[in-house]
Structures are given as structure tokens and as C-alpha cells.
Amino acid sequence: MLGKFFFTLACLILPILWGVAVNWMFNFWHSRATEKPESEPIFPDYQI
Amino acid sequence: MDFALAERLDELPSLLGVVLAGGCVGFLSGVFGIGGGFLLVPVLHIVLNVEMNLAVGAGACQVLGPATTSLLARRITCRQTRLPLTIAGGLLIGVFSGTHVLELAKQQQSFSLAGKTVKMADIVVLTTYFVLLLGVGLFALWEARGTRTGQRVFRGWIAGWYIPPYANFEEFDQLRVSIVTLCWFGLAVGFLAGLLGMSGGLIVIPGLIYLLGMKTHQAVFCSLVIIWIVAFQTTIAHALNNNIDLPCVMALLLGGTVGARFGSEVGVRLGGRQLRWNFGWLLLGTAFLIGGRLIWLVAI
Image (cartoon, rainbow over all chains, first blue to last red; front, side):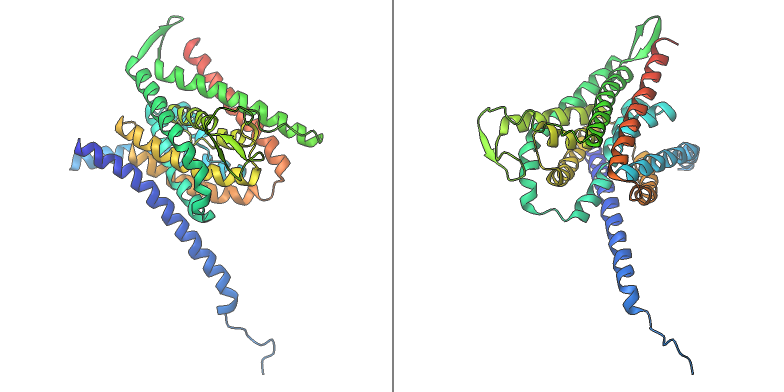
């Protein structure tokens, strides 16, 4: 009975954790993509 | 320990097949913006020969992953959960009834039909899938054709059923809606999700729009919450009946995430009308695949 309870819990938690992780990864990539233009150094188009 | 490891290594090729199947279904899900549960169960059973109850369990459990991501990405407010939680009671009874029917079919095991031995669970699930996909597929094509010709489809087919008690929901075109009608709708969605292992999005969105008369953009938000609740309930029901194989679920999640990423890039290049038309044909194609399997099971 306890085994079934923990199995059910694992069946619930694993896909939810996966979903949270995927969301976190997409947020992370999105924030990096939006930050990139500002964080990149701007080089002058002339070099002396 | 070594034996268990060897057993796992033996399963590796079939798990790679599941990852690939998850990837293909995920790709189509990304293209059409759908859950893909209705594709996953037939593909797992027909193409990869996974036992029907395990295919249904895996399909139901893996939905929790993408449903959680969608819910977090859309930042659903507490107010938007009012209607889905009203339907949740009907969903719960429906899910457990659907799972119970699958369990009964599983216990019935095999029976003889036209001189061939067939499994009851296979016949029940595949026949229900065939009827459902054929019906929704024909409706999707009819609706897409109506949009092309500028003909508007009437909405709110059962919204006019006045059975007390009532509640006011701003999501509907007509504010006063019968709670009984909502719960019956939830019961039907939950039953099909429990029996077929699909997320329910295939019937929830057209159901909310055409049966209950909900505004389209509200239906998308509402369906996300309903799908998450259904996935949560079906996972519990199928886990309690030993219908879930966790390595298979993880393989589906892995393949599905990668496939959906590529699919969504293709999907944004296609127009809405074109998508709806293609979606109708996808449903009909899946229905014919299932129909072929049913004929093969019974006649060949």
C-alpha cells in the first residue's frame, strides 16, 4: 500500500518537475536573449 | 542489481523508439498547438506494440509535464481558475469512471470475435478513439470550410439548457450558466480522458466554444487549467491501477519537448486557416489508422 502511494506520488511529481524545469529553462534563455544586446560591448565602427 | 541493469539495457532500444515517437508527436503538437495525447496512445499501441493500458497510462501521465509548462508560461491568475474548479467535480467523477471502464475491459482480457481472439481493452479504446477522432475531424473540416466561405458556426449549443442552480461567469457570451450543464460537460471530458489517456484538449476547446458558447481567447486559458486538473486526476487513477510505466513516461517527455520546440517554429509560419484545415485531416488520418487497426484485429 505504501509502495503504491509513493509510486503515485512519483508519477505526479516527475512530470510536474519536468514541466517546471522546461519552463525555467525557457525563461532563462528568453532573459538571456533579451539581455544580450545590452550586455554586449558596443564597438565603434571606426578604429584608429 | 546486475540483472536489473541488464533488464534496463534490454529495454533501451524500445525506450529509444518511445523517445522518437514522443518527438514525432511533440513536433505535430508544436505545429498545431495541441497536447497530442490523442495521437500518442494510438502511436504507442499500433506502431510500438505497447499494451493498451500502459499506452493509456503513459499518455495520461506525460501530459502533466507540458500542461505544467503551459500553465506557468501563461501566468494564470486565481480568478481564471474559478470556472475550471467549478467543473473539477464532474471531471473527477468522469476520470474515475473512465479509468474504471478501462479496468473492467482489462480484467475481461480476451474474447472471440469472428473466429479471432481479441483483447477487450484494445477494442473498447480503439473504437472510442475512432468515433471521437472521426467526429471531431469532420467537424474541424466543416468549420474550416465555413470560415473560408464566411459562414459563421452557431455557438452555445447547450448553453441554453436552464437547469438550476446557476452561476455568473464573465467568460461566457451569456453570463448566466447552469452549473449542472457545466458539470455534465466536465463528466464527459473526464470520462474520455480517463478511458483514452488523452489530455482532453481535443474536446475541451471546441466544447467550451461551441457547446457552452465561451469566447475563444478565454477558452484557451480555461482549457489549460482544465487539462492540468484532468492530467493530475488521470495520473492518480492510472497509477493506482498500475497502468503507468515511469521510464516510458520520461522517454515521452524527453522526445516530446524537443519535438514540440521544432514543431512550434514550423507552426508559426503557417496561417490559422491553413492550420485548422490541416488539423482536420490529421484527425481523420489518425482515425483511418485506428480504423485499419480495428479491421486488422477483427478480420485479418
